[in-house]
Picture 1 (cartoon, chains in turn brown, cyan):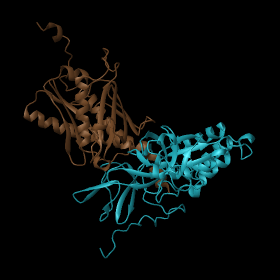
Picture 2 (cartoon, rainbow over the protein chains, first blue to last red; picture 1 turned 120 degrees about the horizontal axis):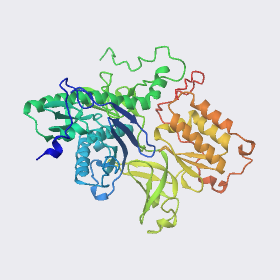
Picture 3 (cartoon, rainbow over the protein chains, first blue to last red; picture 1 turned 90 degrees about the horizontal axis):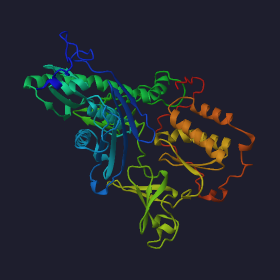
Picture 4 (tube, one colour; picture 1 turned 180 degrees about the vertical axis):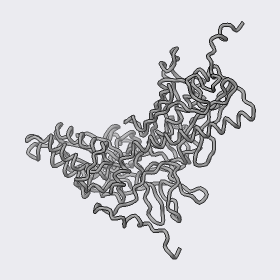
Length: 250
Length: 286
């Protein structure tokens, strides 16, 4: 029994403490963020995070569709997380599924806690997240992309929302799991942080951790978020930098 | 307090070159703590625990006693008195709904139109898709935007085309005292009506419209650069041909000139990029 899967399990952690792609336990995959690649949207961002590629577009505040979702005292935040059919090695059946609905919901709720929605009553802020290529951690990559896109769209909010997943691989707590680690690891803990207040606005967990491991994972995740936060800010600065130069040169 | 330690003008004395009163030009992002103790949180900011943070991406602008952030992006936020270009999205029995590129659609009541409209006959005057120049009259706490079509330069737009730019670029499109718009119309012979909401109506010959659209695209994409006026000017000059110039080519839509506002909308109080006087130190970051 078990012979099918067992011998396929890759070595997730070398004795030297290196992971499957050579990273250390507290190391992130390379991240590149571009703010404002799309012209039709009010705000947009493209994130390459390891082998993940995620595009986010933000529209609004604008009229609410469907109307009955309209709120009289604030904007509603509608989010659609979607994976392209070609985003994984076996074709993903296109369209909404339970997983994407759940992710859309938790991301929308994360943004609800940072966006000043009361400034735009009876409107909708629509966030579209399209995963073009997936390699674990797409909800975090999507959230990061959407957050940069929201800032690019001029939406008022408490702060940008960096996000990262921490997991447990070969008995060790590791930052930012990639696909093999996610598939064969023991736990996965995505989180999103509000740097301004230190609050977590998204926290999910799959698998098992001891309370001590959880506590260590949270610390590691917050540290990872801080790094990502810097990259998000840099992406926005790069897009709007010339404005600053013009001012500084005066 | 009596010492006046909130020196809002402290950056003036640094020996900057002539172009106008240089305001604070720091780019700030949401969540960034803002300098300027004692200033109250103004537009684009919020306060937590005595500290003021930016809530939008924009340029820091201390306007004592307030600390404000001028947004660099985002949709058009209506202001009473603004002249805007709207597109009809719905005809109700006593009003039209206009998309003015704002967060909400703006109702235009028949009493705000120049016509005597019978109840239920709104679509005899304006249909879905028609473009109009209207003025923002009232803003309500509910987010409702009241607009009127009664006034100088307001009315239905016929012919031509609408080009959209970022509302933050409108001061740049207009230029100081309308210099940019003036330069474009002089070169292309197009007619232009600028809406504060980032929509620009362009009328004239196809070439005139094309060149104007290109010039507007340049402004939209490079609006933050110094020396933009010179660049646009050089584009226009390089595409000048005898046939395109001036009024000898009759504009196609001349019959409707009267509907077009000749008076340019007033320059907004604060424009993030008014310092376009400097041709020589154009550093060509692009």
